Length: 398
Image (tube, rainbow, N blue to C red):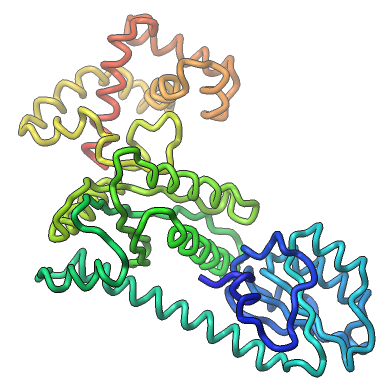
């Protein structure tokens, strides 16, 4: 997607960057002409804002106040023009833009009109969207096409610089969202997150193809032995989810299929990743990794392929029956406690925090589990057996 740096690189006549160079990486969703308050009614995250200092609605004091408000709303950048170039942008406003790392541009009054600038930026955004769609179309056909012949594969490798003599794998990025009162604003935040994700993934070191497909994001990338791309993807998703505008509202997980050399098998890699989506919150993941693969299932994946699922389920039911009956009768969560205690490294403090309960309440639950099962939880072999039974049942029925 487009950033303020891309706008700077347009070298538009009469437009120059005067502050906020460190923020040039900010994503631009569209342009917006600032006129009336409240700005929150009109401004969306990622908008590139335009202000005319006309000494009627805006003087520079008002422009500086507006810059603060607009930055709080998540604008990508701000361009200011002064009627007849009557005065320069105050140094205090320039200094503040640098502090905020907000790209601040000045547009000469006689240099270019806001209409021309808005059209140029809009054209760049549309053109970028067309290019992304083109890439998505090629990837869609590669994953779901019924006839992937050598000629088509050669065309893709030539256009996107992919070397299909090496193995590639498919990743499916699933985004979980929390909704607030303002659904329209939630949707704008989600779209801005998607734009940021698109930009980050397209700038990854490894050659990749990326597309938005239904409510998911799909990428194809080279599977290297050192897993550097997987590590980079982990960092990208963590960095995005930790941004103040997204933290607690949007989080993403990437599920990986197996690696294949033959492009005709890339669709299989996609299906493998897709089949794990429903199980992503059940898989053992004590370190809360953002990138998971079929290997995350460990031994469990073999259990579901051996043909003796009924026998396995009977065994799990027998091991867990006492806890299940007690939870059902008393509205307790002893199985969840057992699993959380394991996932948090047998730490009472961390487990209590994860379950949002007091340490004394956790200790009471642990004592009750030991009483009901007639065992000590420091019997790690038996404990692991119970954990396996809980996970197998949840994986079977998810």
